Image (cartoon, rainbow, N blue to C red; front, side):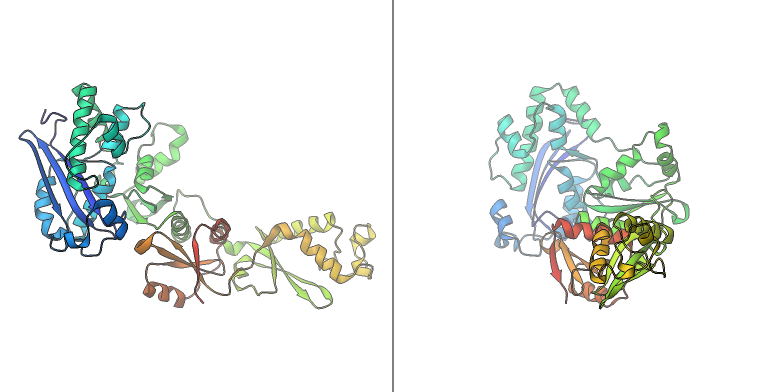
Amino acid sequence: MNNPYFDAPLVLVDLETTGATPATDRITEVGLVQIDADGIRSWQSLVNPQRSIPPFIQQLTGINDAMVADAPTFAELAPTLSQKLEGRVFVAHNARFDYGFLKQEFKRLGLRFNARVLCTVKLSRKLYPHEHKHSLDTLVARHGLSVPGERHRALTDALLLQQFLDAAQRDHPVTAIHAAIQDLTRQPVVPPGVDPAIVDDLPENHGVYVFYGDGDEPLFIGRSSNVRKRVLTHFSVDLKDRKKAREAQMLGLLKRVDWAETSGEFGSLLHEASLLRTLSPQYSPRLRKTRELVAWRLMPQPDAPLEIALVPLENLAEAGPDEFWFGPFRSEREAKTALTRLADAHNLCRTLLGFETVAPCSSHLAQKCRGGCVGKEPVGLHNARVLAALSKLKMPAWPYAGPVALAEGQGDAAVLHVLENWNYLGSARDDEQLADLLSAPRPAFDLDMFKLIQAELKRGRLIIKKLT
């Protein structure tokens, strides 16, 4: 073997950062331990993140702005660091965090960084399946690990990983550790038409992904809180399973995967719905066109029956404050059938509903109308009973005077999802993007988007900011 643990060189890595988001946060310290046939060597360096370090991060790591002020930037460290990482299995605790940060830092410099990755959390779970906790603090306590230096400093934590490997060797045969590492670093199978490098680039965050075939034909759109895990689940489908025949057919056509990271679950839902409507992928569920749907619009009239009209649902975005909307219905026939059944069930007047023009109405002659058509029931009372009968089908009016934004995400990474009249206008990360969205033409009403927005407002999970 190349070293006491595996048949390939290892590099044990730990980073300290300004936060938890690779796209917006930066590295403040790198610590690594190289293990190969020539022995074991350690290296560390503070990194100037070129921004201030949040106070709670300073308290956690002990690294403050003064300590990194004269430290090299990542760009200055990149050549040395790349050399130390090259050709080695990348080992870290919660490895995708450290690996993701390094990939992002190299990407900012126009450089590509890829490696086989071993997560020691997963290794601990595999070697000690009876244990329930596998945090680094837990491993320190369980295995009696101890090295000089402060916890939550990069090199200290990297050296702790080496001690964990030593402890695992005392508890397990070398062959068992080798087999576990081999299994955990095995590259996933990728459909034949797809670039294998994609496996390394897929984010482990909230996002939406799109499968494309020849000629960039959209095949499938999906979302997940972990895009990488979900996409690899698609790739691992058993092609011989008849229940998965349609998915297997899609994978046979797959040529490219694209994705967009989002600020959270709601952002993923909004983006997925927008793409489904725009791209209409072949293997995703078909969405019903909103313009085919209708609703009943009821408008109060002074001392007169409600004005009742069947209108396209897409007009809901233009609804006035005094209007009541009920639906949706897939067709004019379905809408009229529903209202007819409600009329019969609640003894409503067919003439006042506009179904008939004679008095008395046919329901009154059948003793199923309380006489609104012949003056026996006050019009106001009949109007109230109509609204009560339709209450379960009521479509709510937009509850704000104008556009609002739902803020999703933490700190600088927060995104504003801009909404108005049940429409999704887009998502903004800064004031300029927000201004562009508010000045752009409004999209047509979309029933699926209406349902997503309504459900999110009911949950009340996100902060609402009024924009007028």
